[in-house]
Amino acid sequence: MTTRKPADDEVADFNLNSVKVEKDLRPFRFLYGPKNQRFEMKHRELLDQVPLLEAAERGGEAEATIVSLRAALGDEQWEEIRKLGLREKQMNELITQYGKFCGTSAGESEGSTDS
Image (cartoon, rainbow, N blue to C red; front, side):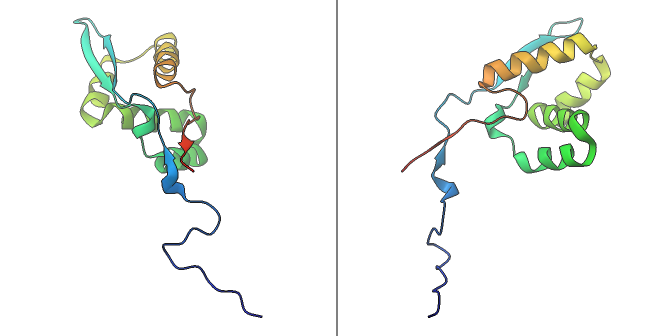
């Protein structure tokens, strides 16, 4: 008895395309710096998770956090944050507020499946 290999368009065990995000994906905005400069971070659900996971594997939580923030801010805003600098308490609060806004904590993602 031979087992038939499913066609490329047939789901064998799970259809990842069925996962839908059911929340507002607007950017997270915050003010920072001596001139109350406005920064905008992409919603966590819009970030490609593969580079973040690779960063965590390569350099642990610190590298994953840096890669995540840079991806969320974009290169231009990331460079501006680097120029301004961030204290530990500021960094922790930014990550906390961003997580609350996105409805997740760092490293966590929410989604639902359509059946």
